[in-house]
Length: 112
Image (tube, rainbow, N blue to C red):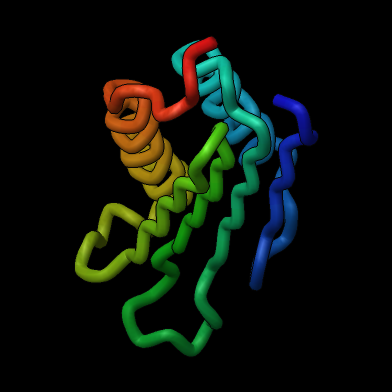
């Protein structure tokens, strides 16, 4: 990656364990698709007064040559997202699918 990984925590205390989990998953994405320029991950816990409890929202922004990919996993009715690690897993699974789709598309770069 050309730009260092950015990890942001919103409405929650930063966690070295969550950060390590995110770094490991980004490393797997880089092994899968080595042309990632930048990656930003935002993890948000809703305010305590939220009626559904703590359902985590994870947003991943990935820049690759010629395109920006965004994964935004809103918890919706997925009660499994009460576990931050499940929300992170699901977001990175979606990011991997988007990278795979991007990698399968023919390159639009001119050939010399």
